[in-house]
Length: 201
Image (cartoon, rainbow, N blue to C red; front, side):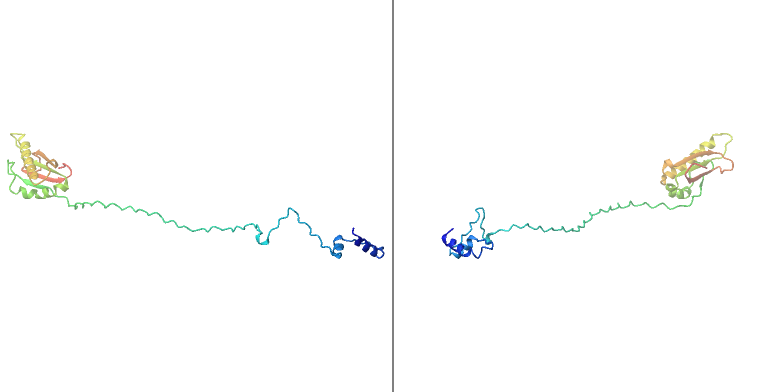
């Protein structure tokens, strides 16, 4: 301790005898005109200019809620099947009344068609395609001297009518000629033509 400090201490000693005095060295140096010492900064301290100080703050992430977009899917084009044009329907043939049996009269003992045979067979020729089969039942008079004569004559008459029907357009396979010969109760010189589906008499 310097002499000036000792002198000061001796002067103040009687007054401070009864009290505890704590003397700070820096305060005494200031009274003596000594410039106080600047405390040395720690070596590890880093002087950073306030302007150069980087403040690391946690980056606040903004949560973005995804927007739900309503997507309307366009329906796929539906191919509508186009119906095929209907096949033309053939008109049904008109329903005709049943044709009455047609009778052709021959001369006695002859198989030649009479003059009016074509006119008598015309309705059969016009409707033979609609009515189906055509039956021809030919008859002849009995002959006691020749039992087979009526059968031969009636067959010739049935074939004569058949030829006339084919000539007017009837399909030959649809004609059924019958040689009936002599039949009781039936005209001996006639041929009966029926238009129908079978060979019934």
